[in-house]
Length: 189
Image 1: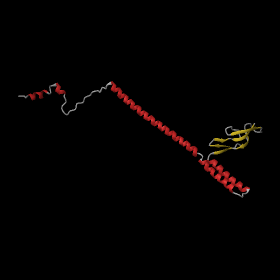
Image 2 (image 1 turned 45 degrees about the vertical axis):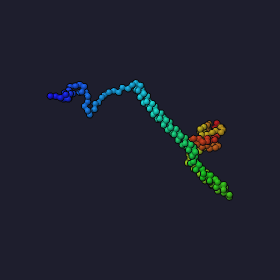
Image 3 (image 1 turned 90 degrees about the vertical axis):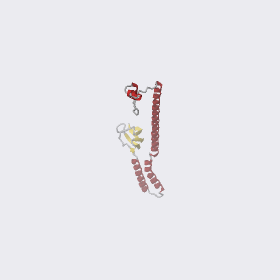
């Protein structure tokens, strides 16, 4: 004879409520979509947007700080270039000054020794000019008048073509292809 316990065990397989229940130790996977409340969804979107804004603001601040650093460094470099830009030229002029002072310190000099000393000093000066790209503007008679490099002091009647240099009164100078001082000239009318 079957015991009541046996009948319940036998009905487990036929009882639909018992058949759906998982056995102990077996995990059941439930695929459910999580449906958020519209307010919670909006709050989540707002939090994500605020986080993105904060990140972009941080990036903008960093970019601005970097640009300020670049600008400051550039200003410092320009300042140093202005301050020390003439250093090479000054180094070339110091020996010229030394030579002139030595010449003046000589009590007893002949005109010939004075002339020799002045010529040596002039060579030092010309060498300093060449090293620093300082070039003379000394147009010869008959050269075409260039208003960018020459300054006409007077126009005079001459037997040469008009708008040509008759005489250079004072040399001009270029420094790295920029006119430092134009040559003073007279021009044919």
